[in-house]
Image (tube, rainbow, N blue to C red):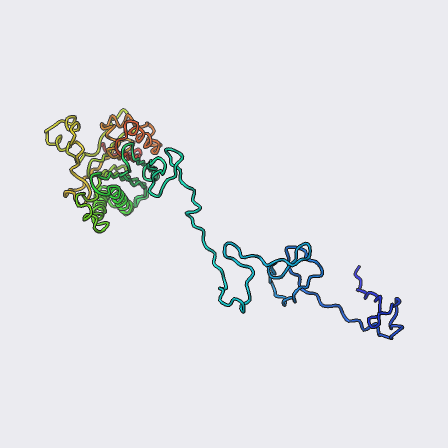
Length: 429
């Protein structure tokens, strides 16, 4: 039940301090009218504080109340638990200050103090050598303790795109990986799938071979990815892709400016290329140089095949009938290439070939870092796992591992492109 508030009785006369009795309307000594007591002061807004100040603190006059305003503890002075005034906070180490001085004392101080971003290099943990596990790695990628060169990202690359997978590894003897690749999948205008792989091997005797292989593989892959969805025939698209790759490598001959002046004895950047497209029951390969493509059917009772012919000294000797294949490849000049991509290359029309396999299988697109250890198609098929079409990345790992176990004298790159069961009526390879 609600009640009206009642005024409390006054203990003394406000005028002469004479004690009063309950119910007195006037002071019995001075006659002061007790009904004229001033009203209590109006409420003041409450300030949010971090602690409970003592009751005898002299609070500043409150600011006019504003809707939605917030008072912070730093806006008003406070006291410690003993009632002593709190000291103004010292400037923070980050440059932020809470005790802004009056304009009259420091008119030149800025209104804001910017925060300095931390140096990310100071926060990055030091890299430890993978060889000795003790030394720090310097900015050039070498251990300061044992001098061992640290692995780089390009030393071992693995990639999958839809049904296609590829791996490139530096090998065990080379100081860097000069191979590169591109794998991708897309759709033809009728919605049917298409898969592609491009593998490039930098020519070590040329300058910047790693840049050449990267430029060529990216240019060829980009052209194939753009041409196939437009409906261009895969073999025509392959030709255009290799031409684009050659132009990309040619362009490196002038980069950086003056590079040939400082190293006139070196050849322009150069690489080989081999690529494959699988689309609508068709298997297309294209190449320049001695990187190869192999066909291995899922049914191992059917014979595998090599789909490319090397642009090399050994291949020319065999084609001319001057040597048999065993003699030619046993010669120290066997791997001297007669065709490549680069500004120094002879004019050479890109090789392309189209096949229609009558059964499912896989296409292996690789550099000589692999086929040196499994040159014949039967040898390559023997190394390839039986489930390569279902697990292409695993198959690529097995093939690269075979090359490394056999010596790993060169960079090793292989792409595995599954060829699905062809539609009824497909021709023979």
